[in-house]
Amino acid sequence: MRKKSTWFILGGLLAALLLAGVVSNFASGHPDGLDSVAREGCTFDEQDQITGGQCMAQAETDNQTKDSPLAGYSVKGISNEFLSTGLSGVLGVLITFGVGAGAFWLLKKKA
Image (cartoon, rainbow, N blue to C red):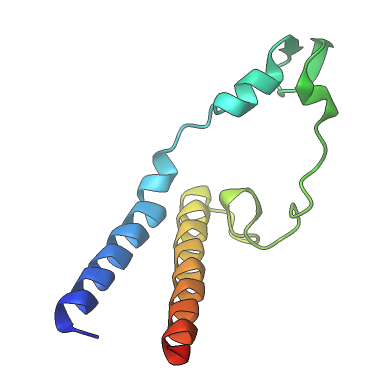
């Protein structure tokens, strides 16, 4: 790989790690567009439980990966929310980068 390409890839990886590790902690905790539409027509209490009305959110079920180590944008076992969210983002970037790099390496070998 050329030196210029290596620095470009490492710079992109560093930017992604910084965004995932730090900036992700400042994301909005409010429902996104899809969640908002699914909640239309229902009323909710202080604990975010449905108290009345009819909406798509009533058919919601638990996520099948709710017990995984990185579920809920956090790392299971780390009680500091800021650290847990940031570490979850960093691990996600590293895993994704590793899978992508491995796929490119395999494709390069075949060519």
